[in-house]
Amino acid sequence: MFITFAFRDDRIAHERFVFDLSELCAQSGVSTDAVRRKLFGDTVQAA
Image 1 (cartoon, one colour):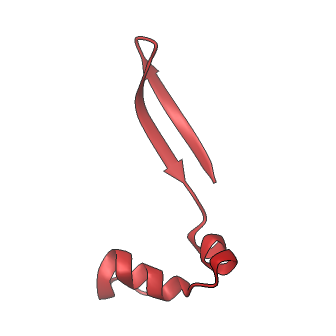
Image 2: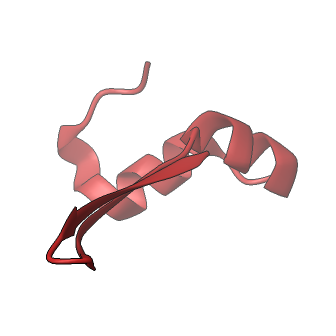
Image 3: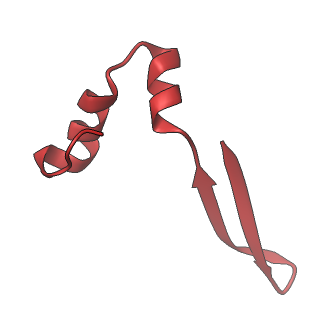
């Protein structure tokens, strides 16, 4: 995972958090497909 920050006037103006869902699920013992369905509904096709 990584986090990037954008600054404006010496303050954080934007934050972006990116992680690998498949790896997180694998380490947690959770089905990636189940998480995708929960987050995005049945409209997203499994990879």
